[in-house]
Image (cartoon, rainbow, N blue to C red; front, side):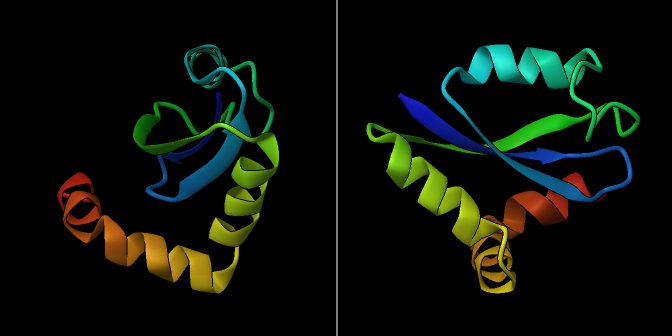
Length: 86
């Protein structure tokens, strides 16, 4: 399986990533082993999607990092994001 995931960071921004092992990657983020999120902890996994093909997951991650993709994701999980920002 291949995953894309969304993390809510300490500064209330969101981080979109891709991995083949979600549990391990989340552990790395949580323990400061990932350079891009090291100083933005604590963080919280708020969304993930699983794909059989690596190329599908990578394509989805690339899309979600675009302006249109961010808009789509916010609409899709609007209630969750509103609750987290409280």
